[in-house]
Length: 429
Picture 1 (cartoon, rainbow, N blue to C red):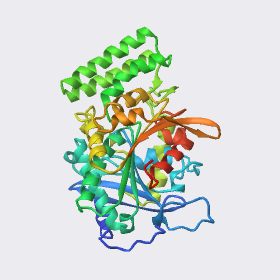
Picture 2: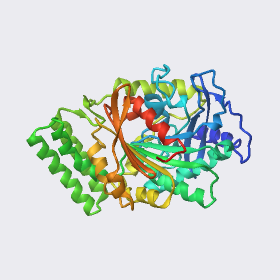
Picture 3: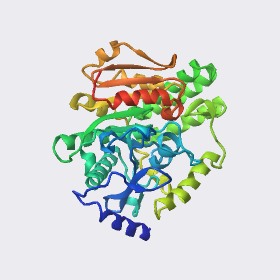
């Protein structure tokens, strides 16, 4: 990794505070103005970020990119790559075949992908002792990354900024948003963080696990005997969580997933209408993405790092933190900040099912939760089709997304676009 270290040290010499940055960015992968770089968030721990400047398809519109919001995307896993999965499989301007995507967030927003925690994607560590082992360390690393990012491109200090975390990325986003907000309020970082969104997020792991058996039974994907087997396994997880035996809880969570795979005929946890790949070989999609990132992308960005080579270690180092909830962090965001807080959930998702999400949301210890429960649930109608529902009170909203699984932006881009326009507006309705 010595060559990687030399690249980073050279790259960071140009990220000094107060540098005037040209809005057109750099030529990176394919078309569109981009920028990217590394931040050494701790000794021997290097975090990679990749920014796409907004690129409206309406060429007749004249705008300043810094007049558009900045969206920060955090992928799940832990160990999933924002620059890979989030970018090329969900919201970036190109798909894994390198073809332009019809629905990309870059049409409307500046989008910053961060490979997080360190060791994920193009991020890496020089010393195995520097992998993150808890959510708070992850949050500190991310805040450090944003300090350096805003020093390199100071124009973004005033730009309204929103964090969107998917799956485990939502768990990381909660603590990241709270710590960042506290730093912002105390003047420790000059920025304009405005909100955080949790997409099918691992906020209350046990709520998700306990929802699996009834969800599968009620959708006709298991019979009563299958339900009992899954429920028994889930109750074992609950007992371990209650005893705060977190490593054991993670092991039992894994066994519960194995039970579901066996009972359902290998259902895909990300979308209950699909079948999971249980072979020992990577899927064609995974092979294509790996080839793209380690060849065309690596070459275009002039990186000397093997993408995703350390991702397995990221999960291993968080095994004792994996099943811990962050519902108290969400409560603090609602009670002690003025940030917009959004939860969205895909109808066809199993791993973080809608019933499990609704369970923890309705039990958040927020002073206005009763008002939120009693608020009207409004359908999201686009082209005479109900694409989902939304309910909100004050700065807290939840979106139910129809015909979408775990990757909502990919599977229901129309409803997602409506949500994002609402989320990034200046109005709290």
